[in-house]
Image (cartoon, rainbow, N blue to C red; front, side):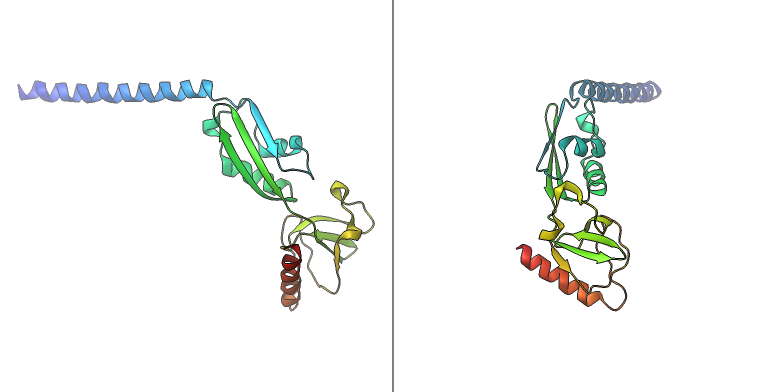
Length: 183
């Protein structure tokens, strides 16, 4: 008799496991069919168009809200659009994604090796262009603070200005002044 009880308990455990698995699978499939992204709304942009933000985000209509990785979307936007300072992604059930952007403000320019580096108050390079070229977004370089005498290394857009060895304190001082002026 003990042998049949053991057999029944193994069978029962198998059926319980199978039932839980089927319920989980049906839940995933069911929510996948209903929680599709119908609208992607972008707020807070002026330098870029909402379409540009959506294109670089990696999102598209029809994506399942459950599987949208907000950190990846945010990182995609910040890596691709240098004027974006911060990104907040909100899933709005049942079918919307809200992307709220805070843009960096260009406050200064540094000329180095025939190029103009446009920077924000933290020293992050927003744009880099040859002297005389038109900056993005209708930005007027003449209205920016021009930083002279700073020795920098070549710096990629989106990164913070890199001073040459020995001039780190000058760049830090300039960044402190820019932050103060922006406030």
